[in-house]
Image (cartoon, rainbow, N blue to C red; front, side, top):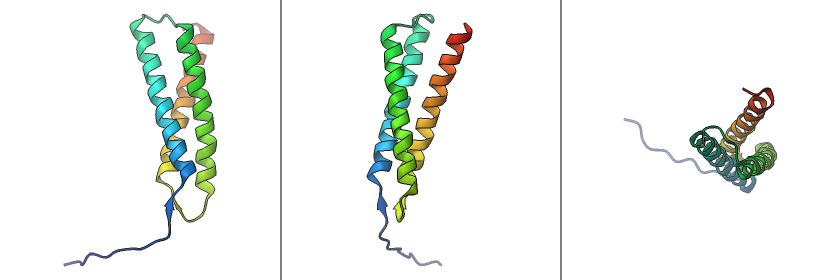
Length: 106
């Protein structure tokens, strides 16, 4: 039978990583809501939704920078920076795909 062992460390969660994850989740939820609302309006894009998408893209770009800065820090846990990088990258890809579809008239 294996005994429980504890590992003590000086590592902590980065504030930049937490901010990156928060911005990524907020942006991701915002883009999902924008897509949902646009779908229920039968594809009609409201200018307010477009402005919300631009702000979500801006938040995700800031979150991406914060995630990279947090990932470079030494002696930190990397869960929140990695989570932020994933969500922020997804938002940038979604908004880029939406813009691609809008430009090509699909």
